[in-house]
Image: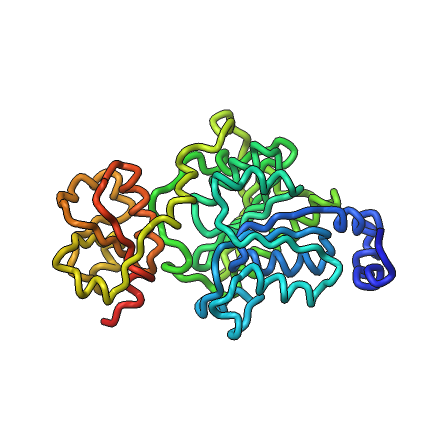
Length: 351
C-alpha cells in the first residue's frame, strides 16, 4: 500500500517494532475526524498528518482571529479572517501530500453529527465548550465510534479515550452538563498547553489505529503545566450513561447561529430602549461594567424570573461566549423577549 516516497517519509515508523509496515498501512487506511481546528485541533492535525493517517476530516465553522496565534500554531498573521479549515488544509498538505483531507466548514450540530461520524473510524474532540463535548459523546456512542478527548483550562489539561471497546463514555465521567463556567477565551490559557495535550491526543489515536500500547480507556490523565504533575484517575462505565438518541439539549449547538448580535455603537444609541443583562462573575463586574442588571451565568436558571421587563434584552459577558449561552438558556426557559448578544463582549468596549 505504501509507495516509495511514503516508505521514505515514514521510515522512522517502519523501523519501530510496534508499528512497522503493518502499522503504517493501518494508519494509511484509517479515517479520523477532528472536531475543532483550534488550540487542540492544531497539534492533533499536525501530528496525525505527519504520522500518515490516510484520511483526515476537519470540522470547524470559525475563522482565524489574531488572538488565536498565541497557541494555534498552524496559522499565520496573514491567515487572520480566513477560514480555519481551509488554512489548516493548505498548511497540512505542505507537510504531507499523501493525505486525503476532508474539510467541513460548518458547526457540529445534532443535525449533522450522526451522518459525519459514520464516515470515520475515530473521533477526536478538540472542542472548547460543554455543549459540543456532550454532542460529540452522544453521537459517537450512537455510531459506536471511540472518542479521543482533550480539554484545557488556564494551566491544566485533561486527556482520555471514551467509548473504546465498549468502555466508559464522557457521561460516565461527567453525567450532567454544567450551565456556567469560563472558556479559554475568557479565563486565559497557557500558549503551550494545547500543544502538550494535543500531542497526547494524537498519541492515543495512533495507539488505537496500530493496536499497540495501553489506551486511556476508563482513565483520565490530568496534567498541571506549572508543576508538570500528572495524575491518572480511573472511572467505570455506568448505566446512567446509556444513550439511545441525541438529547434535545444538544440542539443548543444549533442555536448560536440564530442569535442576533448588537454592536456597542448600536447599544450606545439604543440603550434607553433596552434591558441590559450582565452574566459575568461578581469579580468581573466589580472591575468594570455597563449600566445593567447582574445575574451570573451559573445562577441564571434559578434567578431568571427576576428579569421583569417587556423591553428587548441585551446580554453581555467578557467575550460574547457566555452571553450567547445565557440567551440559549433564557429561550429554553420560555423568555420570549427579543434578545441580543453584545458583539465580542465587553472586552471590546472602550473603558
